[in-house]
Image 1 (cartoon, rainbow, N blue to C red):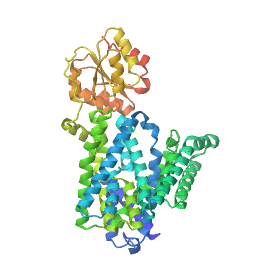
Image 2 (image 1 turned 180 degrees about the vertical axis):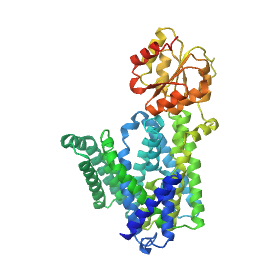
Image 3 (image 1 turned 60 degrees about the vertical axis):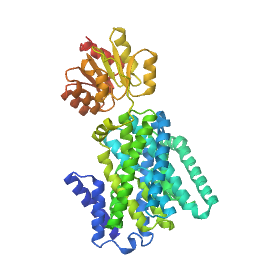
Image 4 (image 1 turned 90 degrees about the vertical axis):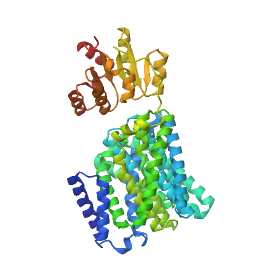
Length: 523
């Protein structure tokens, strides 16, 4: 109880300092834990490498974090991008695992420990990446959907790897039985998600308190089953979270989980810092090498595969940058290895430091400005053939599923139309109707020049991010730009930049065209 109070106090101080100095909370929480370790108040029996107590303390926090991340990973979100998700996840996971394994072997680590390190470097952090996507309001953008799908497949792969390694001492039959048990537990979770839980919610209509009890009951139920089957607890936590991942259940439970997630997030990283203490310089150097491997290898590899499977250059680069870190699942993989005697405390320290370093880098690498900076250096960008730059046309940036309803009235009154969109299916449909188009990102300077943006008589920016509309406005200056927005705050930003904001809720095709006619924007 005294240790719990110490961790809670350290977390509170860390959050206060992070807020006061406007710093990311993650490194401050870890630093607070390390400072707590230096104080000598952490009991020796709970220090890293001195019994299972420290491992169980971290595992408890991870179980809840994994459960909450499972709630966010709804497979329906990325159904449209299924092929891209499978290819990116498969290539990235296997390649990173192989590179991590070879790097560990080169550094003198044993074969089994090298497998743990390779697996740890292969998965990206669901916790960190989803928070970053939510902050940027990019969960439902194409690259956000691809990233979410990749995270789900990575998590499943790492859960299976943890199960396999936990049973490897028992031979091939024991490994196969463990995988079968996980498959059965996952099937039960899928049935509960599709048929059982939605019907129960509709029937009983639980209030907030009862819904929270349902969440905890499902979590404990699946974790209990995993414990009974002698499977890693993370497999039960992930399956339990998946039960609530379908819409609209995930929206209902997200509010119930947010405060608990923040609590366990703080406690976990303070505890991790306390248990690691201040590692020797040698460990920091090894972790730096592994971090460099992740940050240097993942972005170009993912960008290449993602662009090959249909994403535009900028979205592909953003996908790679967001996946360039190791995962909380990597820590649980290491914890499992320590408890089984497969991984030394020193190796776990290195893996934990790698996770900390790469997680801390994500808010920096994941910025839109970084992707825009790297875009001109991307050697695999799809470049269209030179075409004559149009003039006096209506330029539509972002066609989407409802774009044709905007284009038809414009064509009917004789306007020349040029469409910019990054969806291959949309471009094929435009080609079939003989509508001029450029496949690309409407926020790229090169694409805007090719599309004659500065010589257009009207630009309709129907892109997903308000930042893209602001980029267009800064490029054209003087050309009327109608921008679709979703929030009043975004509307004010567009208006201040000289654009004409239209709320998405008001942008039904008939209303949209009537609005333009009334405001005399088509003459």
